[in-house]
Image 1: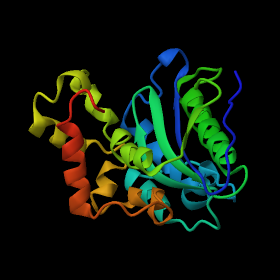
Image 2: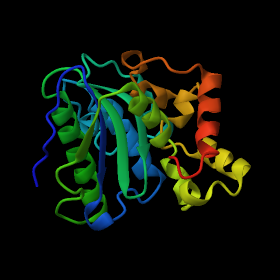
Image 3: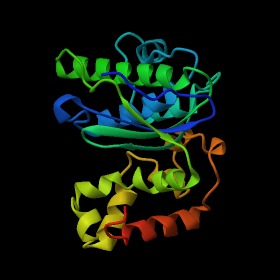
Image 4: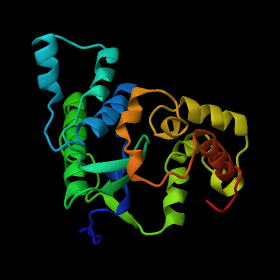
Amino acid sequence: MERKIVFAPGEIYHIYTRGVEKRKIFLNDHDYFRSMLLLYLVNNKDNFQLSSWVKQKYGKKGKPKLSDLYELFKLPRRDTLVSIGVFSLMPNHIHLLLKEKEEGGISKFMGKYLTSLSMYFNVKNKRSGPLFTRPFRAQHVDNDRYLKYLFAYIPLNPVKLIEPKWKEEGIKDFKKVKKYLEDYKYSSYLDHLGKDRLEKNILNLDDFPDYFSDSSFDAFINDWLTLKDEF
């Protein structure tokens, strides 16, 4: 199947993809962390090999601690391929809000990102073959209303993990859902709230409209959580 949409520099797109046969692509916390780290590292015109970095810093048999790997979010990048506005990693799929910085940027970034994830997953789990459905899906964000909607839709994806029918039936336990979102580390929700964590370096928010202060984003999310049949 071919993708009909054509990416254009300066335009914004909702990118999403899922595991083949809807299989899980993240099996534990380390898988999620690796994916977030790759969102940062592969968004670079220069190629970065994590194995080479580990070998150079820790030797052939060295194994970095998780705290050491967090330092990779501080590595300088010569130039990014895309601007990332929002992300959410789910057990069997991924949502990204990307801005094309130059011709071919999104395709290059997604190629590097999905290939790296697939290689890591297959080696770790001793499997072969494609991990993701092809091609990845894309929707052009062609108006302000849709763009602002995605700032809620993407980070609120994890809610369906604990309340699968919340959009149709409403939130049953508001405090539980808010606590779950605050504990869910695998989306940009915490970064839009202004939480201080290194993962915030994944985002390039200066390239997107400044809709929210930290407090207004929380109010914006609360409004969407209390809507029913309108999300």
